[in-house]
Amino acid sequence: MKAITYTEFGGPEVLRLEEVDEPHAGPGQVRLKVVAAGVNPLDSKIRNGLRPQVTPPFPVTPGVEAAGVVDEVGEGVTGVAVGDEVLGWTVTGAYAEHALAVDFGPKPADLGWDLAAALPVAVETSVRVLDALGVGEGDTLLLHGAAGVTAAVGVQLAVTRGATVIGTASPGNHDYLRSLGAIPVAYGTGLADRVRAAAPRGIDAVYDAAGAGDLEMSIDLLGGTDRIVTIADHKATELGVTFSGPGAPFGSRLGEYARLAADGKLTVRIAQSFPLEDAAKAQELSASGHAGGKLLLRP
Ligand SMILES: NC(=O)c1ccc[n+]([C@@H]2O[C@H](COP(=O)([O-])OP(=O)(O)OC[C@H]3O[C@@H](n4cnc5c(N)ncnc54)[C@H](OP(=O)(O)O)[C@@H]3O)[C@@H](O)[C@H]2O)c1
Image (cartoon, rainbow, N blue to C red; front, side):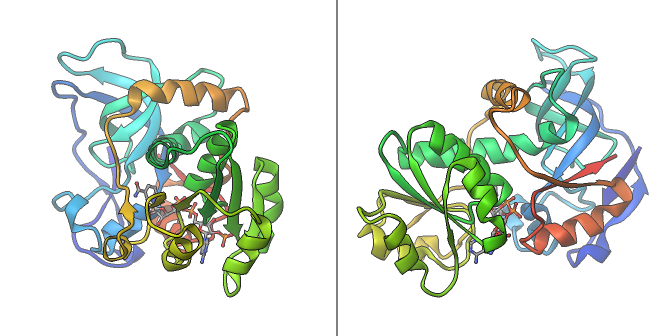
């Protein structure tokens, strides 16, 4: 099968489109014929050698989420059959024609493939963070980097929980944030004053999805670290802030969010789909931090 691989850390140029052996579903696994693979900023961080804890052995095939059609079912797997359409996390890289998965959920037939592949990481992450923060009715949540794929799902889920969301983004994304139900504020110098103006009664919790150095300011605004979670700032520990990384298996809950997305009640902006051979271009754009939505590969 065709897959993207690399055998050394480096820039996008280390990515190669290769012919490799197909994986086969072992016990507890299914194999997908990948239709769409999500490109995440994490993929570039791993490729750059910045995430040794989660780097598989070389050769690495990047990618952690995909949507596809089950074409092999391993021993002991129940409730799914060859031909089923699913979305979830891949345990072999997702930038490939086939990938193995153990944590996945059903894809509604009326959910598009790109949107399906865009959901697993964004949904699991934002549900995990909002649960950790205990965001609910009446809370005012400050969300850094709110126009990003992961955070924008967080905006929608927080609004559904009855929270007021103040989202930081560049001005070009303010209308988008308004359309999701958030109050937009521009990031950069003077941010704390703009947040105070937008939330005169103060904020109750902070979800940092930008990792852009706003944790100290957030601690000042909140008056403590109890209700701050970052998914992107590794200075968290030294500041006494919780860094939240990938959590427990989520596939059994993914179907309910996929249904919401199919019904138009949960949206992800899709920026662009690329053929597999353009993985380097897709990662470059992803690493820019301003892709303007989800990037996908179509093997
Ligand atoms: N720990 C975890 O479990 C986990 C899970 C998923 C993602 N992540 C991390 O979370 C981050 C976001 O991921 P993603 O896939 O959502 O990325 P994304 O879709 O590329 O979004 C990045 C967003 O960051 C915004 N941004 C850039 N500079 C900013 C700044 N100085 N202040 C505020 N916002 C800024 C951009 O907004 P503008 O275009 O408006 O500038 C853009 O919308 C990445 O670092 C990723 O690795 C972590």
